[in-house]
Length: 381
Image (cartoon, rainbow, N blue to C red; front, side, top):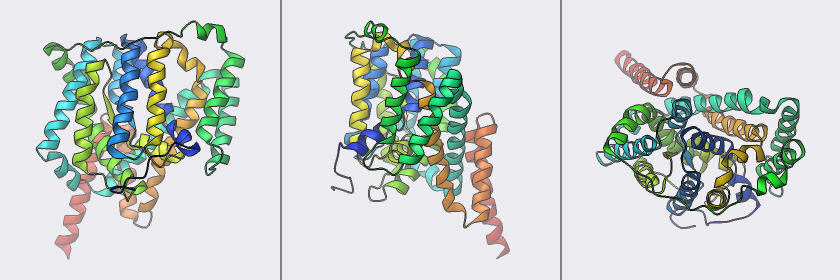
């Protein structure tokens, strides 16, 4: 171990942990590619390379994820490709300014732990709800049976060091796909070597991307990608301190680099780190494997993007996504000894889930309540 970093390993547990976040990432990436006409090779290859760069930089499974608010807006509104790349650059520049100016550190000092736990709880509930509402029932009765089998695998093998549950869930899902939906000859017809092309950017795309996509994303990025991710890293890898400035700089760098090769805006996420860890990852070896998976998709299967979700059925992805959500929500357990802190976290989580722009509303309101309560205690003492 060097500077608190676990020595990189690639074993059964790292292989399983590598796919702990695929239930979030793959559907969002494919959804954006199909909705906006993004170049699949560029999206997948860039995403894979960023996993490798993060593995090298952090030494722990500090996963890279597509920006969720951006992904939802892209899928809903289908903006031009250049606007998506402009949003990535705008987000990267904004995070760079916040980091260099020290504003990011000041925000981190101001927001109490109970509020961060509430943001994690809210995101965990959202991920589990999406999985149960949209993914698990997506294939009817046969899909529900697949989800039941996948769920049993995750529960029974969650502590297994010999049989990686995530890999087994994906394997069962692929077998199910060939039994119920796929013909191997159809899939073979989409195998082709595809090289990524560089992205294009104009000032109009930068401004439009900033207003349409970057602005709604930034509150979620501050709450989940930075504050909650730092907290999860501290919870799971206390021997590897992760600083706020470190996250800010890598967040900015990834989004300034991604458009160069045609990639989509990305972040670090507390859910991704928790998902990799929940399924066994303890080093950056899981990111090496996960990055290689996307490089393979980008270079060899980009022509068949619309077939990938058929190959890995949504019910199987949904089980992995629900497990990730459960792990995130579970972090709030450490607030149980302090009922006021737990109540505050639950309130922040409800804001995050139920209110428009709920993450920023929850973070600002929760922080204000926490400091007001602290001030009233001081005034009455």
